[in-house]
Structure formats: C-alpha cells, structure tokens
Length: 353
Ligand code: SF4
Image (tube, rainbow, N blue to C red; front, side, top):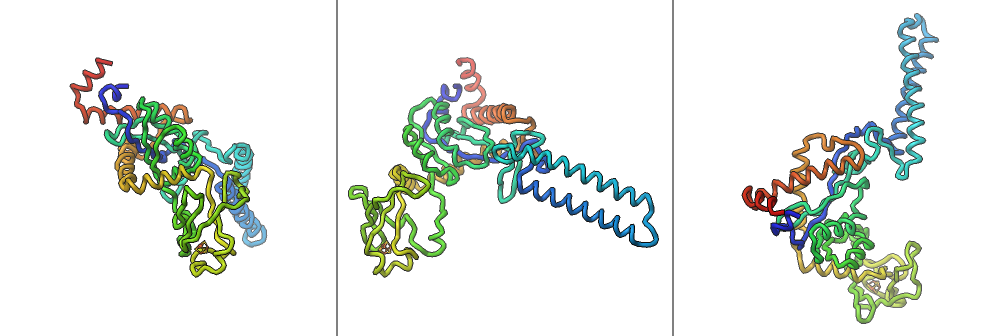
C-alpha cells in the first residue's frame, strides 16, 4: 500500500523468478526412493562385512578376544535396528504423494540446485523492474518453476493494483497452459522457449525453421512447400494438437536428409499456439527482455540469502517458513524504499497512510 501510495509500484513490468532456499532439514534426514535404496544398501553391506568378520573369528586360531566379538555383535544389532527404522520410513515415503519424507521439516523437499541437490523450498518472487521492489512472493514446495507463472503473475497484478501487467521470466517458466492462462487474463508475457529439440544438435531443421501462414493455415517448410493440416487430430497426449505435412513433396526433396528420417516431416501445432507465436514475436521485438529479468530479480534473492547466512530458514513447515520469508521481504523492501525516497519522505508517507 505504502509503495503504491508513493508511486513506487505502478504496475508496468515485473520479473518473476524462483530460488532454492535451504530448510532446517538436513540432507540426511530427507528420503527419496533413490536415497533410501542407497542407505539400505550401505547398511546391508556393513552387516555382511561384520558377519563375515565374525565367521572368520570362529574359524581362525587364535580365537578373537571376547570383547572384540561383543563389539562386532553390538554393531550388527545397531545396524539391524537402523534397517528396521529405514523400513518404517520407507512405508511413510511410499504413502507420500511425491514419494518423499523429510524428518525435521516435513514440508521441506529435496530439489535440484546448481547441478547438485538441496533440501528446502522454492521461493518465487515477482520484482518490479523499475524500482526493484519485491511485489509479491510465494514459498513453493515443488522444485519446478513450470506451474508458477500464472499464479505468480496474478498475485503480482493484484499487489500492484493495476490491470496491465507485463511479466518477464526465464525458460524454466515456459508452459503452454500457463502462458495461455496469462493471455486469457490479459497479462503480457515474455518467456523464451526452452531449447529442447534434439533436432538442433543433429543438424536437423527445427520447428522454428517452418513459418506458419495464419491466413492460409499452412506451414511453409525450408524447401518452400506448404504443409497442410491433417485430418487426424490427436497425438495421444492431447486432442488439442494438429499435425501439418505435405503428402508428396518430402520423398523427392533434396533437403530431406536435413529434415526427417521418416517418410515425411510432420509439424505439431497446439490449438492455442498463436499465443506462443505472439510471445515469440514480442521477444524478437524486445531483445533486452532477458537482461531486464536478470538485473531485476537476481539481486533481491542474492541480498536476502546474504542476510540469512549459511543456513537459510530457521523455522519449520511451509506456513512458518512463509511468515519468515515475508519478514525478509518486508525488510528488503523497506531498505529499498529508504534508498529511493529517503528517511524523511518515507516517514511522511507512513504518517499519511
Ligand atoms: S523434407 Fe518435406 S518438409 Fe522437409 S524441407 Fe523437404 S519438403 Fe519440406
């Protein structure tokens, strides 16, 4: 409210990004099927090793000292107890919807982070591109950003109190459904397409090499042929997908070795692909969109993490972690506003609220 009042939050462009924050939960206290398998194998291997030492002691002369035998037996008993505990955790893990259990903070989740793993939360933030104020945030338990674009954009819009919001985000947010939802809600998005096509690596033409002619509803292929829409509409995953192809041209095309190994090349087009085409066009017209994103959203995350130190969150469970994050966001925004308008103006604005 205060930021809106002093004209620091007037909508415009917001950058959305996510960053992984460590939970109180130690990595050893988090279990996924892969980790559980490894832990059980380690325990089994230790039990086998100690049992074989006991066997050797039985066979060999002179006999192993009694104290040492007892120590080995104790270790085996402890490992067996550990195995029972692991099996109980495994039952809990299998009951959990995402096959994960965290013992210290039950809501913390194992997620990928900088080529390694982290047990924590995926904090989403929308940051105003002009004044770098955190417009809104959300603490997510899913490590993926793919489903976050529409909810975060809507939250950002209601926080700025404006109808018109433009959102920039990185490739991790690219999801047809999310982008469509944003478009349907009047939110303008700048999100680049992920470069997942294996065709590029193999030197094949990719979909971007085929130009869609809206008026005639055809794709123009690199050989200049018109690929028309097939009658068949499903690709097994979705009935909202059409395929475009040329029934005769491919077999005699000199570019075929660079196009397809099949009989003919087929181009897949989603029913709402015009939304994605619009985004592509917008990005081409605004080549600095991703630079704006980087310079906007990465600084707040870096600053807050530096304040937090090596351990990030101090509280447990998503609700409390969310409150903890809100205090950091408040502190960040407070300092930011102080830097922009100064102490006197800030005090005057607070009094006027
Ligand atoms: S193989 Fe078919 S789709 Fe590919 S360039 Fe040749 S005619 Fe066009």
